Length: 570
Image (tube, rainbow, N blue to C red; front, side):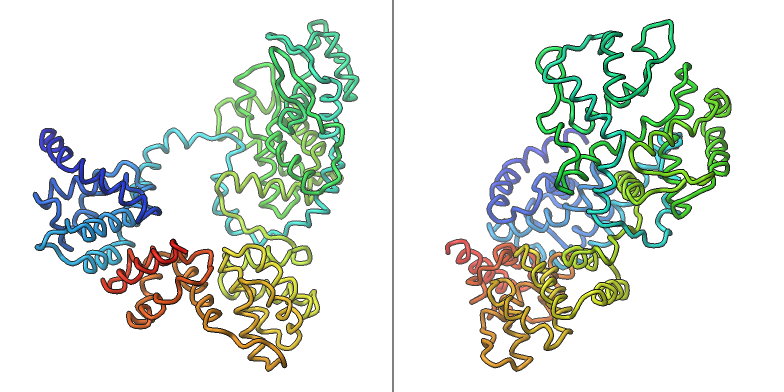
C-alpha cells in the first residue's frame, strides 16, 4: 500500500502544484493544502484517471474515506469542501475534467448536499479526540471553569456597566497603585540578581515604597515577602515594569501617569493585570499543599457569578473546602494548614477592585463582574453578558443584535429606543452604520430599524445621503416618505442594496448563498453581472469570485468571471 501511495502522490504532484498557482489568483479564499489528501485518496480508491470525478465517488470520498484519514478535522470542517470545489473548478476550467466525469455543476451540487453531514463527521472526530484526552484534562484545579459551563450558559443576562463607571473604579484599585509605586521605585535601570531579585536592603526599601510592613523574620527578608513579589509580578503584568539590558529592569515611561486620563487606557491596563487573580491563591510552606489549593481565587469568583454576585462567606468557604477535598487527596490537609484559605484570595480581589465585603457577605463589584466575564470568555465558555441598555452605544446594539434570535434582538432595540427621542436614535444608528463601509449586516440592520421611525428619522436620512454606503437606503426611505426635494433612488442604488444582501447571504454559508442566487434565477443574475461590477462596493470582487465558483449554471459562472476581470481592471 505504501508503494501505491508513493506512486499516486508522484503522479499528482505536478497537477497539485499547478492548482496551487491557479488558486492564488482564482480562489484566494480556499486552502489548496487541504486538496492533497482528498485528491490522493480519490486516485487510490475511486479512479485511476486523475480527471474522472463522479458524484457518487465524491460523496464516498468525503463521507467514508476522509473521516478515516484526515489529520486535522477542525481545518477540514472549515475548508476542505471549498478547497475541493476550487480544485474541481480548476480541473474544469483547464480542460482536465475528463469526459466521463459528471458536470462541474453536478459535482458542486453534491458538495452542497454533503456539506452538513461532512461537517458533522469532522465534529465527531474532534469530540472523539477530546475524549481521548479526557484522562489528562479531567483533573483540574479549583479555578477550572469547565465544570460550571452548563450553569454559566443558563445564567440570566448579565448587564455590564458603562466603561466610564468601570474605569473610575479601576483608578481606585489599591493594588494597581502599589504596582505603580513599586515600578517608580525600581527606576530606569535597576540591576537584579539571579537567585534573589533584590537584596534584603532593597527589599526593605521596596516594602516602604508600596506601604507594606517589614516581616518579623530571622532569615532573608526576600524569602518572607510573598505579597511584595506578587505586586512585582503585577507591575510586570500591567507593563509598568519591563526587562532592560543585561540583568536590569526598568519602569515604563508612562507609568507615573497612572491613573490615566483616558477611560479606555485605564481599562486596557486593568485587563492586562486581570490574570493576577491567581496571585490570591494561598501560598503554604509545602509545595504539594499549595498546589492542592491552586485556582482557589478563580473558584471563588465563578461561584460568586453563579450566585448572582454575592454569597455568604461561611457557605462559600464550605463549598470550596469540599471541592478541594474532592479534587485532591491533600485538599483537606491543605485547607486546614492554610488556616483561613479565603483570606489571601479576598485581600487580593479587594485590592484589585473586584469584590467587597459586607459583614459576612462577599459581593462582586461591577468591575469584578466585568473581570469574571472576561475570564470565562478566555476559557471559551459561553455566558450571556451584554452592556447595560442605558450605556450601550448604537454600534454595540447593532453588533449584539446580529447575534441574537429575532425576538431577543427586538426586545434589545425596544429597550434602547425607549431611552432616546426617535430622531436622536435614528441619528446614532445611521452614524454607527457608517463607521465601517465593509459591514453590510450592521448597515442593513440600522436601515431596517430607522425605517420604522417614520418622519422623525427624516433629518438623519438626509444627513446619511452624504455617506456613499448609506445613500441607497437614505434615498429609498426619503422617497417612500415623500420628502420634497429628496433624490430618487438610482439604478446604482438598487445594485448597492443587492450587493449588501448578497454579502450577508454569503456570510451565512455557501449553501445559503447558492440558494439566494437560485431564487433570483440565472437570467436575472446574468443581467446583474453585466452592470454590478461597476459599483464601488467593498465586497463586489469577492462576491463575483464566489459566484464564479459556486453558481451551478456554467454560463452564469462564466459571466461572473468576466465581470470579476472587469472589476479588477477598473
